[in-house]
Amino acid sequence: MFGKIVFATSGAPDCDSAARVAFDMAGRYGSEIVVFHCLGIPGKGDSNLVLDVRTGEEVDPDAEYLEGVREELRTTYAIQLSACKNARIEIAVGNPSREVLRAARKEDADLIVMGARRAGVEVGGFYRRGVIGGTHRKVAKAARCPVLTVSRPAASFWGGFSNIVFATDFSKASQSAFKLAQSITRDVDGELHLFHCLDLDRLQSPIALTQEGIEGRLAEARRRIQVEYAAKLGDLAKRASIEVWEGSPYVEIVKFARERQADLIVMAHHTRNVDPDEGPDERPFGSTLEQVLVRATCPVVSVNRPDKLPEASEA
Image (cartoon, rainbow, N blue to C red):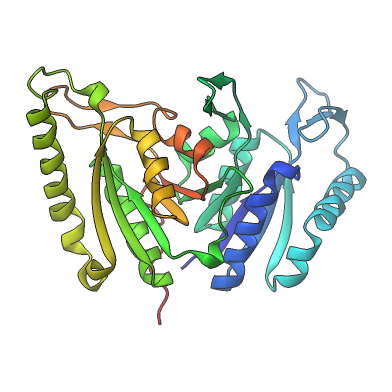
């Protein structure tokens, strides 16, 4: 399914969970895995110095220094590399997001795997308002292939996937995410849960906000999931379920995934409001996807473009 995987890493501990998932996937699919690290951003003008993203220090990225960084990566991922038959390390100097995207294009990658650096402040004592790093944002937005994010150690490993949650907002981009979710479910012989959350905060019509109006919207969403997705599942339909909840989308997606003990969440990168009362609205990255990324207890795959969607492996 995934012939080549680019694992983008800073080499820091917050990438360890993503590393385990990336190497587990490579083992499962017999994939080639490229461990990619961008050393840092070159200095201004004619300076040969680079700001090392690991240390925050300015360094001269000569051959000796680059080999030292390569050796550190070999040591950091020694166990995984020794168990992987087709793995190599690549290092670049430049803007991290640009270099990750360039590496993925050069390698014709089928998947990019990244850890998500998180920062935030306490909100209400329950959640931390997460902030995904700029590198991750830019890569997820522009990547031609799916991007898998592992944001915390509690995330499951690919080798144990059996429950996949596909969260849709009925946008065009969600059609590509559905195709990916369908392929993965078929490949792992798992269960697929089709989920939509009715965002009450975005319903402006007084009629729509009545209990009768909400029930009508929920029923219409279930009908759309059946027509647009479930009807296309074929023999997978017997292993699929449909759920429509109301509330804040990112909260309900995370809650639903936990309830179903999901091993993977599949979403479109962009979300678009399709409420006829409001008209189309391209939401910024972070409105739903980013919040799911920082809170989900399982890996999250985001799809931005349909350029490279893998097919299920042959039996």
